[in-house]
Every structure is written in C-alpha cells, then in structure tokens.
Length: 65
Image (cartoon, rainbow, N blue to C red; front, top):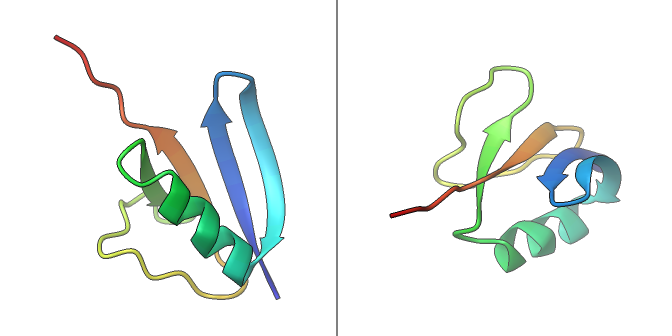
C-alpha cells in the first residue's frame, strides 16, 4: 500500500504516491518545516501517525518577525 502526499513547496503543488516507510522518512526529514494535515478531514495530525492508503498534505509552517 502507499500513502498519497500533497506537498506544497517552492516549486508549487506536487502530489506523490510513496510507500508508507518512505512517507514516514519524508515527514521526519521535514519536521518543523511543515504541518501534516489529513486531506479528507483537513485537520492537523498530532502526534504523527500514518496508515497505508492515507492521503496527507504537507503545508509549509510560515515563520516571520
């Protein structure tokens, strides 16, 4: 099974379907830079628990001052 990730970044809007393990690695690498949102419910996922077949969005965490 795979996880569908909608990834918003500097290049724009990318959609990737990756194996569960790769999705977990991607999210670990981007920790603190992105909010993890369930695509269906539009709610933040805290703590981060991902299941096969889930659809996620990675939204940039904007900082400023």
